Image 1 (cartoon, one colour):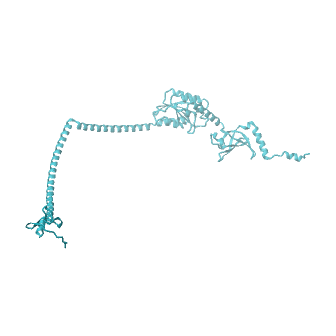
Image 2: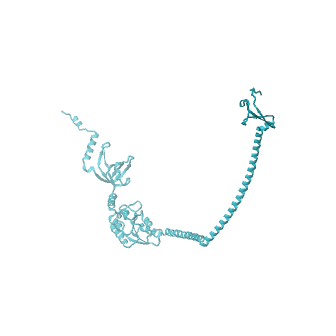
Image 3: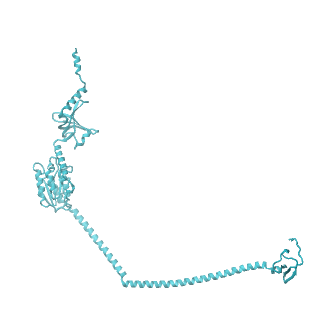
Length: 433
């Protein structure tokens, strides 16, 4: 038998088990897997991890929400407290805190978000058709004389365009088509205005209005307006809203201006700048003409001088003068050569005379030396000094006893003559000094 207390203990669950059970109940509910909830944002916090934590509330209740960093790529605006949004994603239980919360996969501004989706869809469709391609863009004329304007007849936009256009060019012709630019009938009115002004053969058309919400500017995001701009033969400048506003008309138009005032500046040339450029061009033209005239005059003077130089009379005169110069140069050269020859001959004669004298002196000196040498070697001098000279019949000097024998004839030369004798005998003696 099981007691009552024991039975009660079998039905006791942990907190985690209860949380898991509830989370499983949420997971099995098909509607909670992807649900869109609208409300007002409060307690919005951007975590440094990239996640966004916020509370979605209305007059009755509130629900905790989180958008993880990986899902933020589809978020097209900066969230802040007070924004009315539509949050889409699953509702699950966070077991740790025991709370359920909405895991946001997509967040859109309520009302404007739907229009923005329509804007993106139409933009993608028209871009695929090639209506935004630069090859279809027509250039805006540099000097617009007749300017068409499609905008509301009252308001700041038309006044800004008018004031700026007339200030830049007081002679421009402005043609306004008073169109509805907001609310019911605005699309048809804008299309009719573009088509009407296009038939007038104007130089350019500005289509635009002042700033406003996306709902206020929506007429310029309609396909009919985009096609009217694309089919317009006249170049079209789109000048819708403020600088941060972008419409389909901006992509289709031949040129986009951030504001109506900027559209007027882009369409209308500043006549003061034009006149200044004309003055500068005139000054450059006059300066160029003066330089050209000076250059041609200088060239003409050069041709005249060349003609004078190349004329037959001048050529003959030049040739005669050249011949005369050559004759003078030749005469001078001949005289110079003659004078140089005379000078060289005189120098050679002087040098030859000096050389001959020197050579004679040198020869005399040499001769004196030779005479002295010969005088020292002369037999006569030796004979005069008391010596004698003996030779045989062959005329050979008898300087030793070995060259003679008994009976040989000997001839002895002395100072005053020759003694003829015969060898009767020889005697060998040792010489003493």
